[in-house]
Length: 281
Image (cartoon, rainbow, N blue to C red; front, side, top):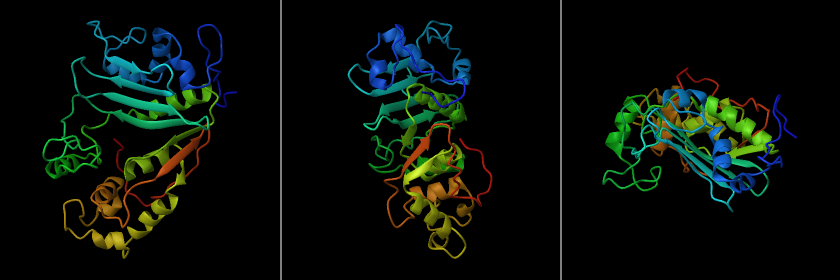
């Protein structure tokens, strides 16, 4: 049974209880899409003037695509400002785990009117798969100077909190008790802490990062100005630390960080208690 106040089990059109993405994906397309559209923040619908029922704008252009194949425990929701756009404004990817948990694989929410930074391709113009296939240092520097975090191509819309509240209620309605995720960068991990997550793996690394960025620590000493991403003072903010880590300042790669949130429970974790305040994008 759902744990969150006011929540009820998710029912299909014929009254049967839905307990997985695979079960939702077996539904007829209109019903399935309506369920997944419930994960879209209200402010996003307003921004793009989307009709919640049709997912079309006033010009009757459909801006939302739901990819949820029957037979798979997987769903992807993509929203664009214009049908022909390559870039998304909103992108979320969810999957069921074998342990009846919800995995939040990706969530991107960005401002379509903001300047774009080509950090998603390498300097030869090839897609870099979150920098695993080379970086674009000039664009990364421009993005950092504009206040963005690693991997951000555009400024965010500050809607993740609204989306995550919907995602937690959605997960709860399916009778699942846990959401799991894999933060792509240090700032993602800190942001997830804010929303009540704890670590399956990686807490030792997060605490070590905070310790070694203190004055005298090895990461603090490596902020020596040897690159624009390793400047003194970057230890004071989530963004500064995240860019330095993205630049390879750690002794080990940023990898194998796994986090989880129990439905309705805030783990109360904060592995960077001394940070200077900054807006989350």
